[in-house]
Amino acid sequence: MSNQYSQLPLVLPPYNLSQSGGPTIESKFAIFHRANPGVFTRLLELAIERRAEGKRRISMKLLFELLREDESLRTNGHGFKLSNSYSAEYTRLLLQADPSFRPLFETRPLRRLTPRVKAK
Image (cartoon, rainbow, N blue to C red):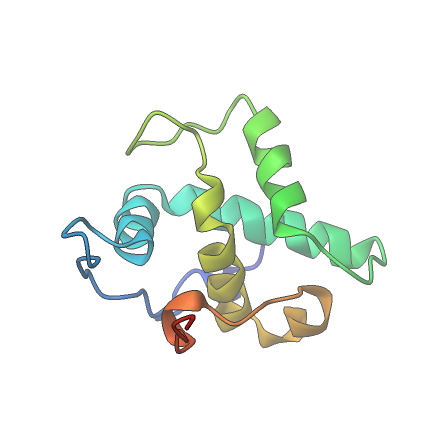
């Protein structure tokens, strides 16, 4: 893989506490990503491969499953190799690293940024 991605100043979410007092998913993701930079590298490689194959859509969930099958990939941080909770964060990080992937990945508004309307 090209070194064009290796020195990118990617912006990770800040460490915050949720309303219940525990760390937010974004904070847990930032900690996991710093401890496991190889995960992002492999996700990026897989996305590049899919694009080269002519795929018009790429699923981060599929890329996660491919990584889970990769016996050479080891992660630190918690009991799971990859938490499904991090797929949206990795998608956004990948799009930040290479905006040319934007048409290939579908993203939805993050709940943390969407105002919540209380039911009457």
